[in-house]
Amino acid sequence: LANAPEDILSDVPLIEGLEATKSAAIEISKAVKLGQETEIAINKARNEYIPVAQEGAMLYFMITQLDAVEHMYQYSLDAFVLYFFKAIATAELSEKTQERVHNLRECLRLTIFRWVARGLFERHKLILSAQLVFQLMRRGQ
Image (tube, rainbow, N blue to C red):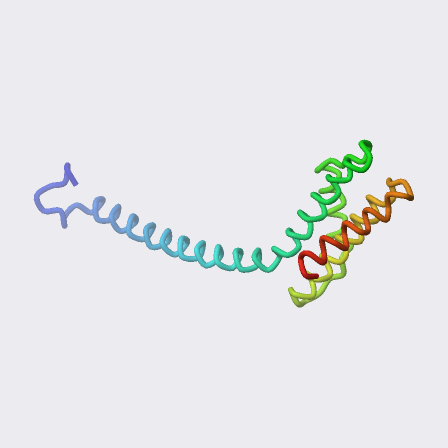
């Protein structure tokens, strides 16, 4: 615009550039709106799976406390994540999200329990079971 002639309507390249800028701005605003709608949908879906994340956190911190019983009961986060993903892969599928969340939580609980119990002395398996029951009772489940 600084270099435009007195009659800017006669400057065809300037007008074409402004039209291109306007169409690009419209496309960008549509993309932003779509991005906002997608963000809302993702947040809604993520919030439905929060109970699974809470279950995983509860189980992880429960098993990390087992080293107070016996010093060799130490579990890494990497190993836990491996079994967490294994539980997700083996959980029964469902079209309803609530059923899927329930199936994921049950499968996660069982997978982690089996993994940890496999490495415990027999006398300590009852402690693991009791900790799990107490945690579930505390959470009202």
